[in-house]
Image (cartoon, rainbow, N blue to C red; front, side):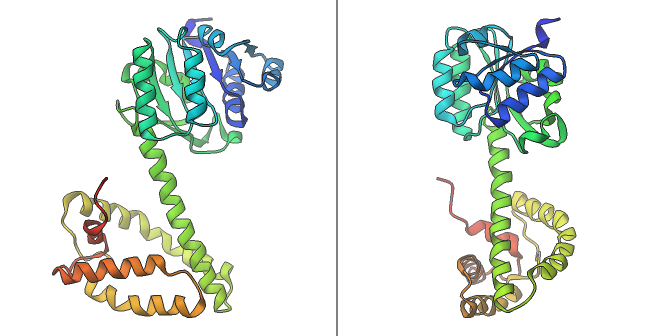
Length: 290
């Protein structure tokens, strides 16, 4: 058994337990710790070793995976293991912001440890399969060293040395899904308010999604270059639809905040002389970065 096959997992909620169980199943000598010690018992039964304290768990392995409830819990646990982390690699897969990831990396560096930040895109039953994705960022040396081990968890991707990059990727992916899905629910309300079958509509609408990958890539390139072609048609033409879109929603008592926002942006862009450009050009009017 080599040092590289020794792993510690701090935090045994549903996801942490799934991670630890996967490591045990793949033959890693796995040490586990959880604030509520009863959570360690099922892992011990399948071959893990339970440590009485977080610091002792960290001391047991060169690679430490942290999977806790939130950033506050991470801060508390890191404070308790400060004397044990020197020479270790910390892989924190707890949900959190890019700023939190960068603060954790500074803490790790100040205490002599390498830091990799990770996020989890999937559910506990899928850990160890191709149906879950872990974006990582942080120390390139540590990532290269431990990449084979991290691949045990599922699909992985490295987003660079900035420790906040994985969190940026995760939050953007989740936000994209939420923005899309809340809009979809509003549309279903509109369809149902008119007395039509939402399932039949969705089946038809889903067929149109095939055009979106190329459209999204085209829009991203336009934003990157600042050269806006007439995607979805020119704003002059698109804007003519907006009063009907808003009026229809208002008549059915369906939320129209997003439609009003779009109309306002289109009107402003047209007034500035850019009516020949497309939807992606509205990016230029979004609020500036804080």
